[in-house]
Length: 459
Image (cartoon, rainbow, N blue to C red; front, top):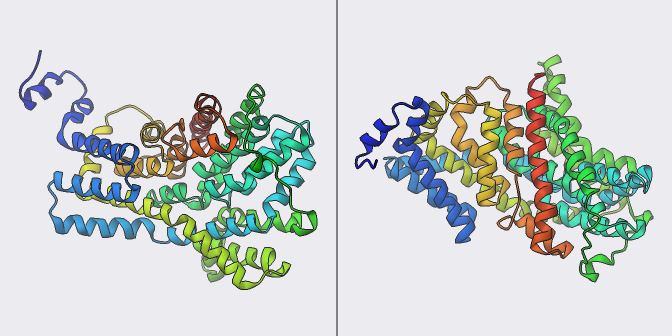
């Protein structure tokens, strides 16, 4: 039977739970249309992601009945509140990663771990090396840095390329999606008022099984693939050992943010009136201190000129500027939804649905990721949609950050830049890239959700 009037359509669903019929109301429709347009602008028309967010946000605001002044105020508030000290955390994180890479510390860590694990367990050494250097290195930069290491180790150990590479790249992906100070998890944590140190600690716990399954275990099944990368990329030479920093200082500088972010919150609780402890407990200051230590230990102490170090830092920040704009755009989208009452309406409609907020947030992030391709867009859009609901749930916000982060890594395919980065460097066909890279990302996503659900039972 076809209903010609909207009220009759709602009446037809009156026998269903009220939470389902609420989805037919206009705010839900507006949100779905907005997300559809976002997907079309980014994935089909290839318009800049930040501009796409602005256009969709303005359209949603007008459709929601907001006047121009309110929309303008929401845009300013969305940019300011979303970035805040996140600019410092992400910026300092990029600088630290650049120093770790340029100094050769990443190569030193990889060489040492491969030496410890030996050829028999080389996959586990690669996974651990990828995780350690993936914490300070942003994904695209980290990918470019570790590819020569993967090619070099594959050649010297005479092992299949993907068998060696997938464990390291899965660890990089996990760090990118789960762990601050990477942009997406740091921004999601900020939006949900989650403790950054606890998010990092819980993220490390959840990361271990995700990396194990998606890396060494899945990687062991890939020996049949025989990629033939460009010889100019494959014939790489390691830097001489005497040019590399020591192992101790390499690991210490790479993991200093982890130590500060995870330990200082507890120390601050024990010494609430100590100003120095309070300052060290601030995430932005912990990242700043890590950069200063790395600049001295990996740069000045080894004879690098300060202008060279400064130039490296500037280049690092330029690399994350686009990511920060994307985060700002997602913040605008969230603020428009809040100002128009859309987020509150969605939250009220979802309250009647008997599903864990962890599964719900993971599922929405996964759907947006598959449609849009960007993990950052998927994660921050999910926060915008579910913000009020997630803010009032009994589940710890740190776990919700991880559930969204793992969902945002789901099934990378042709609309994701990481897919093409992997395909081109390893010179694989699209089919083989789907059978290797895409499945690896899917495993990372599903294992992340399972790990969060398990951790939730004990917290």
